[in-house]
Amino acid sequence: MNVLTVTLSGRVYDDQNNSGDDEGEPGFPNVDVTVVCDGKSYAVATDGNGDWSVSVPSGSDCTAIQVDENDVPPTYQVNETATPPGIVTTNVTGLDTGFVNNPGSITGTVCDVASSGSAGNGTCDGNLNEPGVDGVTITLRGAGLDGILGNTDDITQTTTTANG
Image (cartoon, rainbow, N blue to C red; front, side):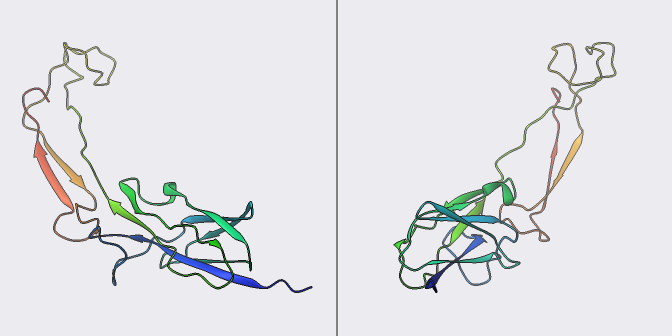
């Protein structure tokens, strides 16, 4: 007996301008996507362009589309989720999931763990006797606010103050 199938497809992509999937926005490769239809899971990984597709029996009730957020860079957060299509009798496209880069901020302290005032354990553990180090230039490298590596906002520098 031949079972008629339909194809569900979508894309997992970098929503660089936070406005939905636009031409030229890159997809995320190797992201695990699971579609749940009639209680059965259909798992697939995105291709090099972030595209995915699965075939399911026609008439299936598809109730969930799960994208493994651990497969995208840690500074990215979901901003568009695909709505499960419900009962499917024809091919369904456009089941896209978008992520936006939200790097947040990084905080820390540079302290003098070698001085006589430190806890002597070789780590900066917040001991009030561990003096901060003033004037240290910190350089951070990574995709800047636009989420694109290789352009002018990839490097940020700051200098420590007297409290490290």
